Structures are given as structure tokens and as C-alpha cells.
Image 1 (cartoon, rainbow, N blue to C red):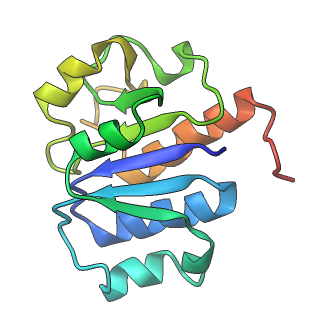
Image 2: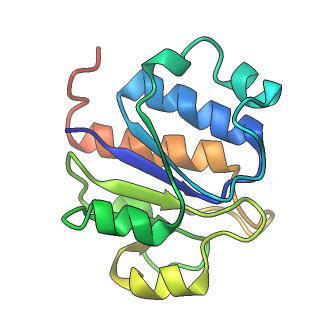
Length: 154
């Protein structure tokens, strides 16, 4: 099994490329939900992922509903600035899905409402609205891996 990062309608290719590199480094699967705000042959996307693309398990989906249907038995956690619980309040396990929204708007109210039991936020000062998407994804994935004692990583 593996952890999963789901990006719902990502807009900035460099963020997605950086997340892909994190996925390659950790064995995390990457799911991209269309529409994407860039082409997958974008030079910025490729550059951010460096030469690690061959090591990324990546799936493309036409909707978030398609992800939920395909992985109906999965545990989904939703990153948002609008949550009461922190990401560190949850216990993660192998196979979990971490869902992130587009950089400019986050996840839709419908997705957040449907997953309201597992919405989570990053603690931060009031000086900023949110953290960079790729930083948020890395923090959560590494917290999950830490909880599992970094399986298959050295």
C-alpha cells in the first residue's frame, strides 16, 4: 500500500511538480483531478519534478467523485484553512488519502461538507492566509510517515 495525495484542480505547475518530487521521495501516490490549470508537458511542471517523474505513481481523474468511487474503501482527509482540528490531531495509517484544493480557492464547500469529520488545518499565524500547497502536502505526508515510523524509508 501507500499514502495518496489528491490535488483537486491544481493551478500552478511548480507546486504540482514539487509535490510530485515529494511523492517520488516517499512512495506516495499522486492523483490529479481535472481540470488542471496547466498542461502536463509544461516546462515548469517538469523542471520542479526534476528527473524524478519516472518514480511517481500518478493517476488522472476527471472529477473528485471519480476518485471517491474508485477508492470507496479509502480514508480521506481534507486540508483546508477552515477546519477546527489540526492535522496533528489525527492518527494516519498506510493507504490514507490527503486531499488538497486549488491554490486560489481551496476545496469546494461541497467537498468539505461531505468530509467534515476529517477536515484538518495547519496551525499558522494570522500574518498569512495559507501555506504554499506543496509545503502543506509535504508537512502532512511526513507527519503520516512519522506516525508510521517511516516505513521503507531510510
